[in-house]
Image (cartoon, rainbow, N blue to C red; front, top):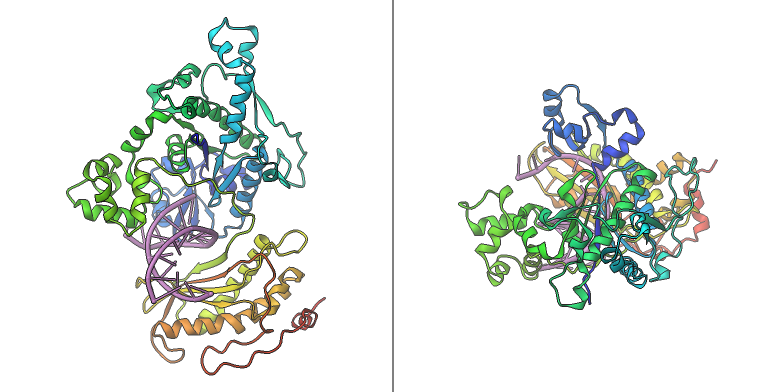
Length: 533
DNA sequence: TCGGTGGAG
DNA sequence: TATTCTCCACCGA
């Protein structure tokens, strides 16, 4: 089997891009998108001031009083725009598998698309004519590359039409142009090339050292992919007004890593013979899945005389360990995967991201939430936010559930002091014992939603909170310092089909003997929970 | 299945 | 080093 060709797209300072669309006066100026006292992200002009992600907002304002501030505590606009990006990209490359990572990154497997373009070029004899014979008149007009594959028609079924506007009300549906004239095809790639010494010309990508027929055209496939990627970036910029950086390589990890070399707005292709060289020079902390813990394990093993954590390079690790020695450092199964990543090997497939999330959660952090009754109150707006977000994420335009959450989870960080460090603890409870929840799509007023949240709070969440507090050694009544640092409510356990409701609106009894279950109520009778206009 | 950990943006 | 507000995979009990 031939190697895959993968694109990794990363939208530049995505929250900032969203805010710039909402308020164009932000374009080109230094500004911060903050959550509490945390810099969630910041515009590139703000980065030039020396400010950083995750820094303190207060310190940033002290150093740069004119830097503008935008509150980013509600993720709703970013989630909404992220979905637009996703559907735009899927529509622009029908037939390609698209996997989403977070709100603003995507991987696209363009192997089949690139191979069909390659086959067409070979069929038309355009490839070798173009580089070997006299430069024909038509040559400087380039070639036409297709954005569709013949593969897997079901993969594209039901996808939205390509559309040059993300504003549904004002959009003028542009005709879907599924091919493009690539004018510089015979001259050079529109990408940065790693390594730069390789050269960007088409002949440079037609040279191959491999005798494996599957790999003979490998670099040329990357070349074709880089032209397609540039066209995609152009369409994203024109159609949605967002800037992104893109990497082109033979697997997800390499594509993501190489894509970060020329941010913002850069396109970078990693030639196949340079994988070892590329990885060797990389900082370990830039390799996906080498998070704080994994690096700490490495750091401990290598001793403190080595590079500082932030500077540790892959080549240092590879020169210190062979595979068996490295794998032993980690729990079974983990080490093999990490070792492969250090070699630039990653066979994880691009998986089409499901339209339906597996969970929805809402949380907030607190400084002065110091009693259980106050926490019970604070859960009300959280629960209302959760219900609103569920309506956005889990219910379609016709009011049908896309998937049914069956579990409610409450997580808290609770301690005896305001900044005593503590971990999250959580407790889950079935939602299927609370039938009114499944009426969410039918609620018409804010008042009804508030009422539902109140009922869920009393019936489900408050008992869960009490159980958690007791479990953590806090008394439900009486004195004793208690600080709720964080509250999180989540709807999880999403299933495809409407679950059986076990009993209607029971109050779970967290302590004491089990009550006999009530029979399921027909849903008609649930109307009485809500006052309708 | 539940609860916790570690990774990602 | 954790900071914000999430979402997901995975693991042991």
